[in-house]
Amino acid sequence: MSDTSNTTEIDMAAPLLEVRDLAVSFANPSAPESPRVQAVAGVNMTVYPSQTLAVVGESGCGKSVTAMSTMQLVPQPPGRFDRGHALFMGRDVLRFDEREIRALRGNDIAMIFQEPMTSLNPVYTIGDQIMEAILLHQDVSQEEAVEIAITSMRDVGIPQPDQRMKAYPHQFSGGMRQRVMIAMALACQPKLLLADEPTTALDVTIQAQILELLRELQRTRRMGIMLITHNLGVVAENADVVCVMYAGRVVEYANIFELFDNPLHPYTRGLFRSIPKLRENMERLVTVEQIVDNPDEYVKLDGFEKGIVPWWPDPPESVKPSLPDEDDEYMLHEISENHWVGVFKTDHVATHPSRVPDLDYRRSDF
Ligand SMILES: Nc1ncnc2c1ncn2[C@@H]1O[C@H](COP(=O)(O)OP(=O)(O)O)[C@@H](O)[C@H]1O
Ligand SMILES: [Mg+2]
Image 1: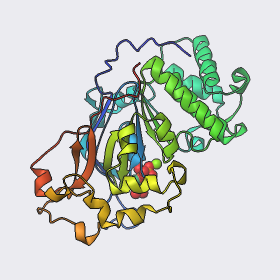
Image 2 (image 1 turned 90 degrees about the vertical axis):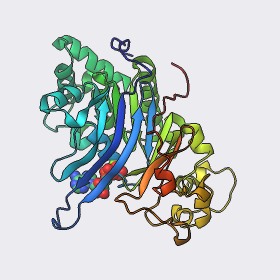
Image 3 (image 1 turned 135 degrees about the horizontal axis):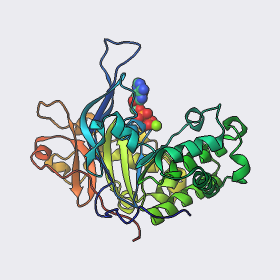
């Protein structure tokens, strides 16, 4: 593994990334007069050094838009930042100018995208592209850059990296291209890695290798990771903290063990119970819909009788609370210490404001 030169300056107790009340919307291109699509509707999450925050939730719930916002990668238009902040080491990235954002990207923060083919240039060799990323961000000679590129490729399990440097993207399989993307992202030793479904296209063995590599980098470089995935097995093995999203909002936020042992939001329970492998006995499989449509699932929330009701866009009629006349019926509430649930903003909740999700927790000490 490459060196650990810039780890000493990292304060382990200070967040790397604080997403605060982030709201992002898109114009509807086919119907410009219609309301904007609220992709992200007030999201809060925090990532610490050496920590993996897993972000889960069904397709379209706003995971990628949240991650891309923290590098200003949301196209504007049609996108627009409606409100909120994305603080990287205390500075709001959303307010960065072009020069500041270019210094940040691929340097302090790197992102691995879902579709590697769209992020590699077909007319340049793999080696040229990794080298370019290194030379752009690191003060090293051409020869040193070659060494770093080869080491990075070897680190992600690309065989014969010195030969493979000369190949073009189309000569690589999907899995190999994904590893190239990861090598490029890691070559610059980012403090924060945004990994958006990084291993979805890879077979299980390679996926495990890559995730092990990322964990190793966390230990040696204190890298923070936002890991976007729909694979709850990957979450179980890699996450320190889990953020469950639905419809552009955080519906649950807790440390990995608390979330798996004691899921409080009906949607989270639905996600877990619809996965056969995680179930210990052979109860009948249920769908997410069966759970979120069942009123009994809502009253299980501690504080329900005081008017704390899990937020859901279309809850069963019998549990829907009466709400003060406000724009947003949702808020994130710290139900018990270090465990947050998205709830309806009833009078009771509104008068008991709680802190934003901020969990300085890792499975093991580094
Ligand atoms: N460039 C775009 N233009 C219009 N709408 C977009 C764009 N990117 C994302 N969206 C919309 O924002 C919402 C959230 O998308 P996304 O963050 O990609 O979801 P996911 O959780 O699957 O990553 C979706 O409804 C999606 O259609
Ligand atoms: Mg996505």
